Length: 139
Image (cartoon, rainbow, N blue to C red):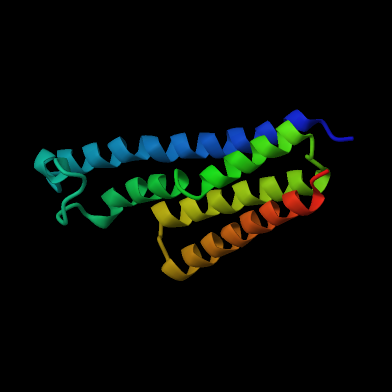
């Protein structure tokens, strides 16, 4: 029998990734401001069209990390509460976190849309599979 609290490790890793991306938002904004690429007014109502892509990418990626991954956190808590965590689900959880990390890395660096979409799609299919397996295996 696997320790149920092991599911908190991939949850913590995904939360850490979210904070790392969050920190990139002010870093990139301040660098752009000091370089004269943006002005404070560009962020008055979110991000104006004047904000360069490399400056806005961490913000968009952060939003990605607070949307669909919420279903991952909920599922992980359901696995823990129900005592349903098994080795396969733990491996899938880590795979999901790895895919989300790859998505973030692609998104905030070279941002190849095909690569990003491929990893994003695989991560969402994996998460959907995890949900299906949870209900199939629910005792």
